[in-house]
Image (cartoon, rainbow, N blue to C red; front, side):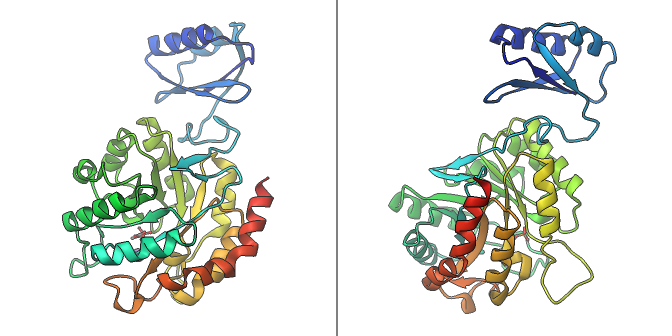
Length: 340
Ligand code: PEP
Ligand code: MN
């Protein structure tokens, strides 16, 4: 249930409603919008007694019953787009940034080179994975602590960049806190509820990838885990799903992306690299994602993709990232306008 307050409602009114909700053993979650404040009432089932009590209050404009399992992430709760600011790069509400970086951190030199090449293109939000949860246990699993040290060193040299990094489980959150600006939950972990609850309390933005075979409902419920546990800055990422088609690595589900934007106020970025799995598909899928209204792109790039420890086939050579940017520029410019 969502309580929409009248525009004239005072902070005391909001507090008294929150107290009432808490006394009935629900958790209130308050969002202050530009015009109105809304209060989500979190609890397993709505106690029917609460509704008539709330309806009689002067400061309450409307009570919306949300039967969906996701509430805080829903457009009913917050109609306007959420804009997330990562060290000056805004995502959502008409801001459509390109974020990029290597599939995995392989050395200090490799990471530094990518950062040099990307910052030259005005890209300051950089993915840098030190944990690589792989389908095969025999594949490269990430540099782990050595990778964290490389990230720290690069960050000291480039203090204005922001790092996105994947966290594979609750035990790795603490060790990544000082080097990462955004946590990523990978597709394989998108329904790891213990991780989502712990990350919700970690106090940093989270990029939540859609599960390998996850439905939109499951994806949004995972986002709800993050928000219900305190995370205010959740970015969804469509990275393709498993279908019968094998010509692409995954089937990039742009229809679901566009449909999901109607259900949630959270920004949705698209990962065209894992979506297609092939270098030659990154430009067309990026253009398609921008045309379909995504809030940003998350792209893989490497100084020397042929030698990459993981995902060699899909990474853009970082020295030619400018060519990629030029190839998608008209779509990027239109994407910004479309949202305006
Ligand atoms: C990644 O972004 O590094 C990654 C492994 O992607 P996904 O979780 O979408 O497979
Ligand atoms: Mn990868």
